[in-house]
Image (tube, rainbow, N blue to C red; front, side, top):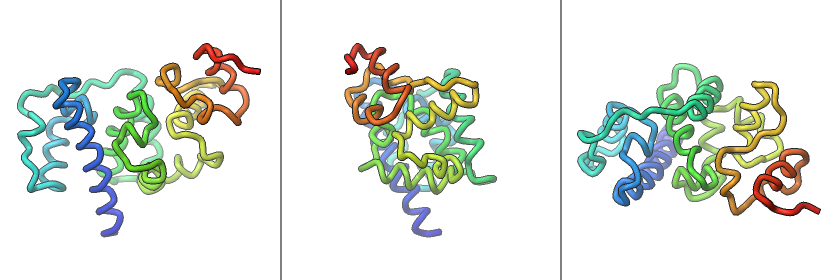
Length: 190
């Protein structure tokens, strides 16, 4: 349990580091960067990082995060697979859903060091969802495939696929969706 708690703290530190970069660049507020409410963010900072100055996140100046429909759907998917009764899993569902709306790979959006850290986080907090990724798909792609399957669609792409520079590595070896995404991106497929 202690190792898992430390890993969760590592992930939170990575996310908060990315949030601070975005806040300092004037791109977002702390709640917009994390998807957490002001109270949730304050709780994380006080409990997990008591020595860190909370005022760096300018919590007095932020409004509550307002997820759009896509973020809410992703959050719902994550919560449906979260460890029951675990507040950390619910918190990570909010963070992951918010950060997934960014344009990079999800592990990069979260500020993690590598993709395996993301896999570990998902396996720990969303075990049934993570276990279903048997083809080792990129996580955003996998999440959106699950959302589309739930709605009865088979060809969907993650929201940032049109801007992605790694379309080939993400969609290359698979059928169906890769051709659709390549066409959306204006990439010729032979």
